[in-house]
Image 1: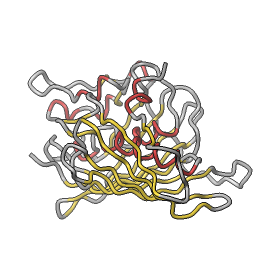
Image 2: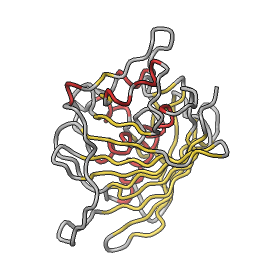
Image 3: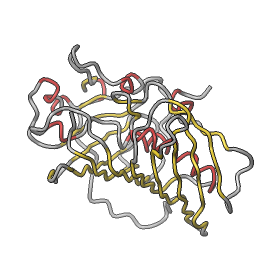
Image 4: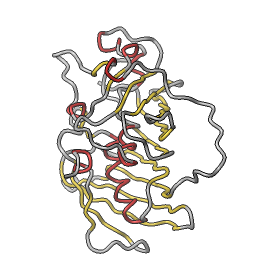
Length: 272
């Protein structure tokens, strides 16, 4: 049986897949993957990325999504069109539309393929220094501010040094670190990485900004490898917060210390 995430991101093509034409998929934005009624951006990215990968027959390398309206629970359609299928990389565009509202939720562009493990490597970064998984904090809010339902689907643990914002004691540094895994123990595949890059509390929560909804404008995920089994070590940082917007840069490392995903996000500062 598929895990919760695989089931919640399933897509069904209407007819035979045709890489030379327009392909339409049905999908369901499931209950329990939302924040205050709006589906998590990484979760939506994973659904659309799965449809795009089915059309081109290759795993995602980089997927960029522009968020046009909230992703509400219920049926959606994803339309995928191939731009080019090359020897090594295939490119496609996609659009996700809510069937209940008729509004476009996402517009996407992605490149699909696989890296070359035999190519030279120069690694100047390293995984974040984190306490052991069991020593980190299960993210829980105060009773008057219940946690979004999505956090019941994740076995996500925050570095205790990053959790002061929950008690009104932000660290003053726009950074969030911790571990990512699924609560049901599901394997973390390349599509789960599309969720992981947007699963943590925004790093701006550790500044003087309020802990409120943070709407994503654009999110780009780079898939750098297939993760080894085990929780992922993640770190997210923001350096530029101005004019009502901020950027968020993410790194995701697997249990062997290999970089498996990166992300860059542009979002609006917290809205009440």
